[in-house]
Image (tube, rainbow, N blue to C red; front, top):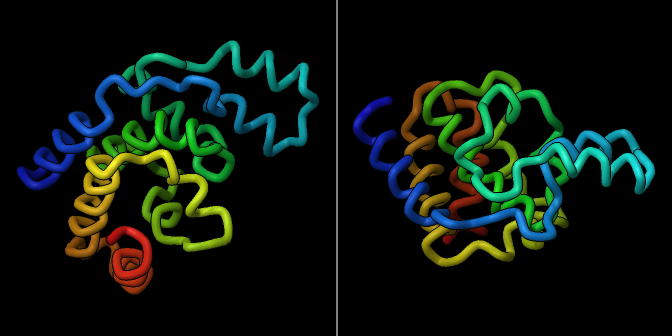
Length: 152
């Protein structure tokens, strides 16, 4: 990681320190939601999920599940820092963090409604860093719009 990426990762770690899943949607559970699973199956999947330490979730697990599309507000607050840091580390290959932070659809405000000011600032700093990333040229207009409209 570059110095800027390390700085943002530390900002994220501090902002999300101590956050637990609570009653939120877990990572494995998102696959069940995506598959229209029964309540029983969803409960079984939730049993497998990390609930106390988002930093303990391997990036390979983040990349393997439907997560970002199906989290509720508690699930998003718990898992988002793991996704952001994995993205900064370059260890995500299929999960598209920038898209989920910049797509301003109908449910976006509710998915991020539990974020504190410090957490929102950490996300903003992450997006500002990605705005200057030459690998994010395609996403640049989306990032700029999201920073103007939502991550202010």
